[in-house]
Length: 185
Image (cartoon, rainbow, N blue to C red):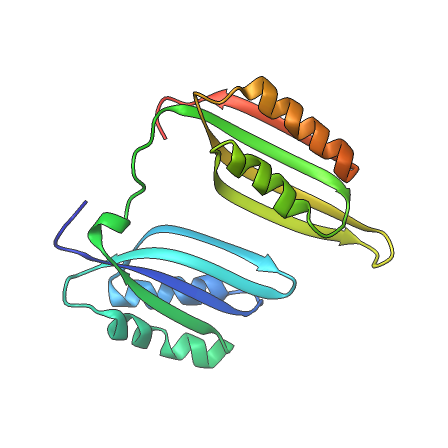
């Protein structure tokens, strides 16, 4: 990690429209900032983006926030900037484990995310990515969940799989999961 850089988390929210990512990345490019990591999604008709950026050490939270003035006025976005400590920029190394990918599909009902994530938490499984979507009509909504997680090597993956299958039955949904060995996470 470069100690002569400042690091920031930038959160962007607003109504979706084509060109938002281009406008955001242009503001950062003109500032001379580097996008180290980013993720964005559309939830309903709302655009949500999280970026981890690095800048020259002369920049602070106010400077970063001001770089977005034009794009926030043009698009009605809300931007929040948070300066990071150097030790919070990169994920801490963890013991090698297994990557678990879970796909869930079924009728929508309250508690699906809670019950799946609670089962994983009880097994010390760390969720690294999670997205959900609701499709279909209001009277027959279909729920889809995609989840990536790190499973520690000391977890009995057969039991975890069995527990996921039991949960799928109790929720009346389909859960498919895949495990693969990873060298280091």
